[in-house]
Amino acid sequence: NSRQQAAPAVSHDPRLLLKALINNAPCKISISENLPENVYAAYQPQDKVILIRQGMDAPDIFRALSQELAHAHMDRGEYNRADCAFTAYCVSYMLCRKYGVDTQGYDFSRLPDELKNAEPQTIRGELTDIRDTLQTMTGKMVRTLEQSRTAAQKETGKER
Image 1 (cartoon, rainbow, N blue to C red):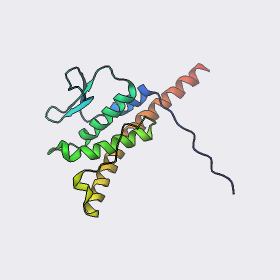
Image 2: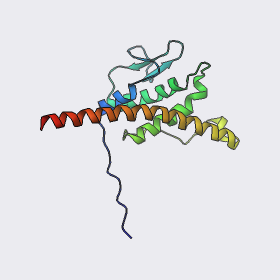
Image 3: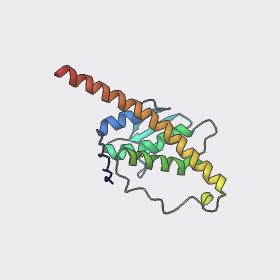
Image 4: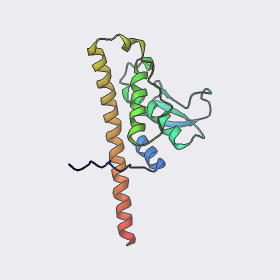
């Protein structure tokens, strides 16, 4: 009859999270000062590059970059940004939730029109795309974070 204790909240260094997110990216990432006003990052499939606005704080970079990296991961040749937009948005939200980045700016009150009246198979397909992209990105992040944790433990062991 024991009560289950809540798992302790794991907080990550924002710079380490960004490093893990960027590590093994499927495209180049460049800083740009020429993005439109309300655009914080943009994946450009023709050049295989993500442009990111300079001067943002770590959580904003993580949110913007995670969404654009999801687009880059879904680009397998015949890429259409509109078709991948909802999937990338969901993947970004779930990455932020998983790693403790603020998610208050996400809004799921409106579904894309093609999903509102979609058949269960279509919805299942969309959920599968979200899961697969999330697993790809999370797997790479977990490996990088684990390597950093191991390196930090070795450093701590040397200091003793």
